[in-house]
Every structure is written in C-alpha cells, then in structure tokens.
Amino acid sequence: MKKDIFRKDRKKQHIEEYLKSNFKNTTMFEYIYIEHNSLPELNFDEIDTSTKFLGKNVDYPIMINAITGGGEFSREINRDLSYLAKKYNIPMAVGSQTIALENLETQDSFKIVRETMGNEGVVIANLSGHASLDEIQYAMELIDGDAIQIHLNPAQELAMKEGDRNFKGILNNIEKIVLNIEKPIIVKEVGFGICKNVAERLYEIGVRYIDISGVGGTNFIEIENRRNDEIDFKDLYSWGIPTALALIKCRSISKDLNIISSGGIKTSLDIFKSLVLGANMVGISGELLKYLVKDGFEASDKYLGDLIYKLKMLMLLTGSKNLNELVQVPYKITGELKDLL
Ligand SMILES: Cc1cc2nc3c(=O)[nH]c(=O)nc-3n(C[C@H](O)[C@H](O)[C@H](O)COP(=O)(O)O)c2cc1C
Image (cartoon, rainbow, N blue to C red):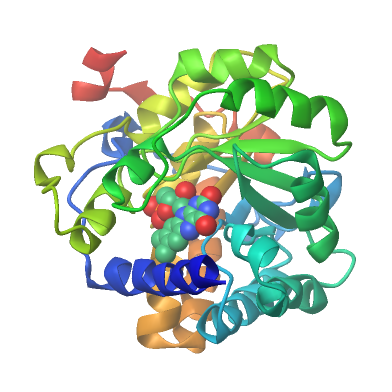
C-alpha cells in the first residue's frame, strides 16, 4: 500500500516537473530538407491521412503516447486525452499500469480511456519490461487493449533515487511476452532513443512494433534530477539518441518492422518529416500534456486540430495525396545528422 501511494505521488510529480521544464535537446529533424512543390495539382479536401494501425482504421498517423494513470488528477488527464483521441479517431496509450496492479482503486483512471473511446478506438496498455504474463493479461483486460507497450527506461530508473538498478533478463522476458500474448507488443523508450542494435535484437525475438522515443523532448534524467537530492545529473542532460537519428537507423532494419516516431514531436513539420523518413505512426506526449494542463482542454483540442490542418497542408505542398505517396517524397539529410550517419 505504501509503495503505491508513493507511486501515485511520483506520477503527479513527473507531470508537475515536466510542466516546469524547458528542455534544450534537439530531435535533429532540422537537418532534414524537403523541397517545396508549387504545382501540386491536388485538392486540399481530397488529401487522405487515414491509415491502419494495430488492425483498426484511424484517421491520422498521430497517436497520444503514454503519459499517466493513477489518482484523480491522472484520471482527469486521461479522460480529456481520450476525448481528443475519440474526436480525431487517433490511437491513445495509457501510462504505466503498474500502479493498477498494486492498488485496485486506481483502475478507473485507466478504464476511462476505453469507456470514452468505445470499441472502435485504438487503446494501448503499458507496463515495464519486468512485467509477468499475468500482469500483462491483467493490464490488457483492464482497458481491452489493442496492444501493449513495454517501456524500456534504464536511464530514467538510474536517475531516480528509488528506481530499479537491475536490468538483467528483460530481453528474455520480452521474448516470453511475444510468444505468449496474442496482441501486438510495442517496445518503447521514454525519451532516450532506441538504437539500431537494440531494435535488431528486439526484431530477432519477434517484436514488430518499436517506438523509438528519442531525444528532443521530455527528458527524464532532468525530471528525475529535480526529485533527487543525492546525486546531481545535470552533466547527463544531453544523453541519448536524437529522434531523427534513431528513426533513420531503425527504419533500415526491415519493412515489416512498424516504427513509431516519438520524442520531441511538437510541430506538424516534426510529424511530416517522421512520416517522410518512414515512420508508420507518430507519437506525442509532453507537448499535448502541456497544452492540456497549462491552457485547458480547448487549447489542446485546437493544438491537435491545427497540427492536422498543417500536416495536410505539407502533404499538399509536396504533392502527396495520401500516406503512401508521402513516403515517396524525396529528402536530403544535412549537417550534423549526415555526419552521424
Ligand atoms: C509526464 C510524463 C509521464 C510519462 N509516463 C510514461 C509512462 O508511464 N510509460 C511510458 O512508457 N512512457 C511514459 N512517458 C514517456 C512518453 O510516452 C514519451 O516516450 C516521452 O515523453 C517522449 O515523448 P515527448 O517528448 O513527446 O514527451 C511519460 C512522459 C511524460 C511527459
């Protein structure tokens, strides 16, 4: 019981610290150059952004990525986020459900997402790489999940005073999950990026969905540092793989690996460039949370609506009628990103 009260507090502190932050790292999407086409011969109203994700039709290749769950505060956030997911018919992942395994009272803060989104919506469960098969079943059943995200967050845990210190056996555990759980398994980072070698090891054991969640947005070393009075982690604030770099490297592994581009996605250009680089879906967490909690539901609704308008605008300006055509758009990799590749 004490542990889950602690976890509930931590969830709230993460959001509070996130909202106070002003992260400095870059996604490196600024090094992707795409040419403007002033003769696209397209009608804006015919631009088709729909796609299939986890077996269901969604209207846009944008998802609300894992953020929260737990107490009343988290329930309200999940309620509002799931209204948005329903309104735009886009997928939504809940935050880590470990708290719901320890404290049944927190179940509602997760269940509300499926209740709001109905059967047609894409709802994704979330647990850590240590989760047992029973725990995965439970988390999935709670929200009738279309898939489960398994988060890998060693950098965050090590910066957290009360965090995990043992990361052995996680790959084997994920393999067991892949072999025994019917629904798709998405393995994700939390903002430090998945490198090509890790993605290949995951692919070899059967994982077909990877959320690279790279550097450029939410920085959990920084968030945890503000909660940790023992060690100062400021010198590690730049640690991790920028989102554009992780995306390009992981994309080269295989066509049947579904890649979710996330980490520092804020603008329509970030979304558009992710898709041009071959992402199957693009995830947003921090930026949407900021609009919702700081400016209110209407502001977060407007933020998403504007993003969508501008995504369609960029599709038109590159002559892309749909997402299949968008992937064919030529691009150039420049500057530091080119050097790193
Ligand atoms: C307040 C907050 C809480 C988060 N909690 C979780 C979580 O419980 N599980 C998880 O897999 N990722 C969690 N994340 C990480 C996000 O899903 C995402 O991977 C990361 O924030 C990078 O994306 P962003 O830059 O758009 O925020 C959280 C992010 C934020 C901002």
